[in-house]
Image (cartoon, rainbow, N blue to C red; front, side, top):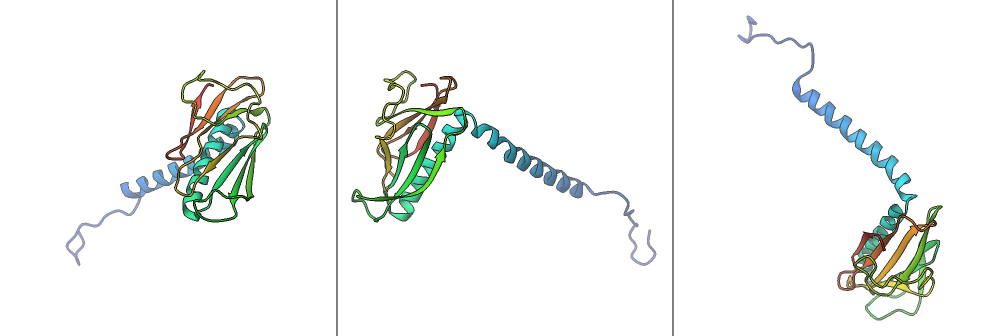
Length: 179
């Protein structure tokens, strides 16, 4: 006991439980960031990773359409998708667009086809290889709705197939396994 304060003196050696917990939380966050920063690159090279990347781009385009009040268009080719934005604002269908970005398919992955309808079930009227590429685009309106469509993504050897489906009413994009 300290003669001046009447309290027992505590040893300052070691760490408190709070200090240890804070250290563990910081280490866990750093480990999670390391895993997240390494994993997407590998996954983006797969058909699934590319399909998820295209779906994320479509969701970003939908948000951009509602915030800028400009139509957004996704043009689909065998080796890439191109994000275009209308030059004018409003719900009227625009006559001209400018390119915002292009997302190339990774090596060994291709877009097999695109359809102007929503394909929810595997085997649901799958278009032939190459169908719709360069001719069918997916448009997202300023009110958040979209022209429906499905993008069929696969490995070049025909394996590892995924479809990115865009819904009309919400403009939301979702990835489904298999064609």
